Image (tube, rainbow, N blue to C red; front, side, top):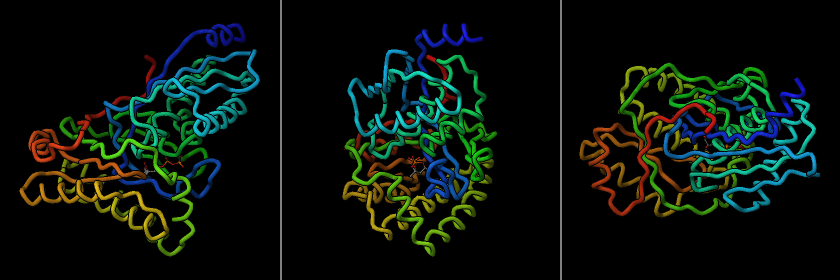
Length: 323
Ligand code: DP6
């Protein structure tokens, strides 16, 4: 057994995990360390944006060496090393490692790079060590790195249960919807000023507004499940938009603002498209970028109407996998 682990840990192995965008958002933790959410969320994992990570254990190291996009990144490096400590503790791994991660997505711009990053890390760190974790276990481990990462273990539509450390894991939704699309509108690739973790904490502290958010978002969730089952893009779009708007109203009421002038401009263009009968709806996360929710038959018209915006048209992505 030990020989096997030793052999695997010498091998190079790269894991790719894809970004997911929430249609029903996760916003607020009841346990900061374990990253347990107050509510169940639902997302769509996309094909075009992802992270690839290698973990190379090295007995000669006295700390982890973290390289992200070819550079040492102190802030993210500390977070990654902290998560590696969790993994080492849970699986009795007694070696530091070189962690080499490449984001095929702009880091920190509200494009959920921490989701793909921590999913890839949890998978790579355990698999390289010779451990074959189930997807449920990987989802839990990824969650402890970054909440939304629990969903990036799976492709396509995914639901992440609230609950306790054992039960707060994601699972794929049994929904095949081939022409569903998310168009990422690149507004700003720069690092966001306020991390989602900090903004979440402020939201949770406002008990009245926050409890209303939890209540409403869970009503949105049951409607969303029905709308996805019916492949009803208008219903999916309306609920997702309402859910994102509620989250941003809460964020703004508790002192953080992610929307920029450009964000508002794109949002009003999406709404104008709808006036013309085009099925386009929006969602946004903890950053300025807007994601348009639509179906394939509307994509060409949407592109024609938003010519000056850089867009990435995404289909359903895949479960995290070895590359
Ligand atoms: C707005 O998963 O980045 O994207 O758990 O603190 O790492 P931490 O937060 P993170 O939060 C993502 C919040 C969101 C909504 C969502 O993806 O559900």
